[in-house]
Length: 442
Image (cartoon, rainbow, N blue to C red; front, side, top):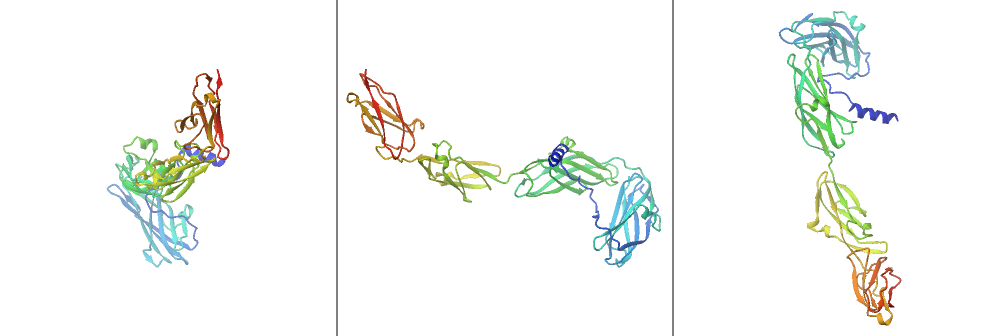
C-alpha cells in the first residue's frame, strides 16, 4: 500500500529527482579526515570593489597533514543575504602537500550583494579523498579575519529570463542516443552563468537531464533501456553570475516557442499470424515458422521482430479429424513482407481442405420404385458455396468429402408423390452413411 501511495504521489506531483545543478565544481562530501590541520588563514583584499568590473576575493590556507598528504583546498564566501560563491585549488602554492599553503581566488561578479561577506566554510581534502571542513565556531577561531567588505555598484536582484526551449534528434528504445536541446536565456545585469533542463518519462517515474555553462545547445544522453513514449520537460533553470536562479515548470515551458518534448520510439515491429483468417474451422491449429529467425508457433499469434523482410512457412495440420493443406505461397519472392519499427504486418495462409472419405462412404437411396428417378442436391451447410453435387436416383456422393462434416440432401418434387424433407448426416470415415429419401403417394 505504501508503494502504491508513493507512485500516486509521483504521478500527481511529477517526476522525482533534483533539478539541474549550477555548473561549478563541487566536492563530494566523503568521510571526515583527521589528518589535516589549518595553522594559518588570510584573505585579500579586505574590501572588494565591484563598481567597475568583477573582482576577486582570495584566501590563503596554511595547513599540515600527516600521511596521506593534503591535495585540495576550498573556500566558500557567503553574502549578507546568504548567497554563496566558492573556489577550489588542486595543488599547493608552496610546500610539498604534506605541509604548505593553498591559494584560492573567488570571483565576485558585478551586481553581487554589497556589505560584509563572511567565510562560510574552508575545506581541505587529503589524497585518500577524505575531507575536513571548518565552519561556524571553528572558523571564528582562525588566527585571522574571516570577513571581507564588498562595495560598489548596484546589487542584482533579478534572476535570468528563459525565452525558448526546443529539442532535436531521434531516439529508439534499443539504440538510445543523444538529443540536443537548445535553451535561450539571458540576464540583463550580471550575466548568465548556467542553464539546465530536466525531462519526465511518460509514466512520471524517471528523469533525464543536462546542464551547461551559459545557454544554447545542451546534449543529453538517453539510455537504450528508457521506456518508449513522449518525454516532456519537467523544469528548466537558468542561473546568473551572482547566483540568482530562475526555474520554470512544464506549464510555463508550454507557453514558450519551440517543442520541448521528445519521443523514444519502439525499435521493433510486429508480425501477426492470422491462421484462421477466412479459413474453415479447424485450420487455425496449423503450425508455422517465421523466417528469418525461425520463430515457431501454432494457430494465431504475433512475434516482435527487428525491422526487415519476413516470410512464413505453414505446416499441414490434422485437427478434429479433418486435414488441411496450407500452401506456402508466402515464401515466394512476391509474398515477402517488410516491417519497420513500430509497424505491423499480417500473414494469412491459403488453406484448402483435404478429402479423407472413400467413395461410397456417403450415398443417396430413393424409394419407392416409382420415384427412383427423383433428382436431388447435396451440399455442406457449414461451408456455403464450397460444396454442391446434384444427382438422381440411387448414387454415391463423390468429390472432396471431408471427415466429421455435416452434409444435407434436398429432394426435388416427383409428380404424384409427396416430397421427403431434407436430410442432414455427419460424415464418418469408418462408417458409410446413406441418405434415404422416401417418397409417399399423394
